[in-house]
Image 1 (cartoon, rainbow, N blue to C red):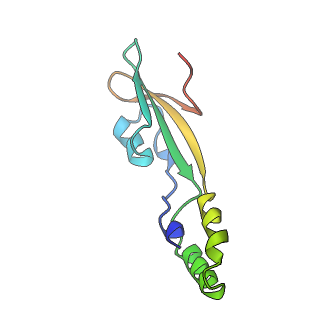
Image 2 (spheres, rainbow, N blue to C red):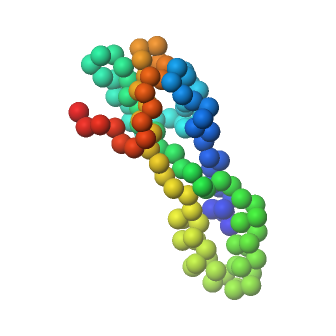
Length: 112
């Protein structure tokens, strides 16, 4: 039940695009996982975010009912189900010297 209530809302990826300030990106995605300053003065940040694990009172209630009906045995099934809910994605954002987005790329950063 607790896992169903403690998810995170999906980030609004459409709120940030080329030209957006760094603060606007971090408002949606949180702090970057890694941050690298490149020789040309740009900054490349890697963000990890999860989609499909929003908090759900309905899901929590269903888990609670199943816990009661099965005298707690449902936890053996329900916990892994909640653990696998949602998908983690990566986004690489490159910022110019004034911390404005110049490139957005899904996936891992290129190897240097």
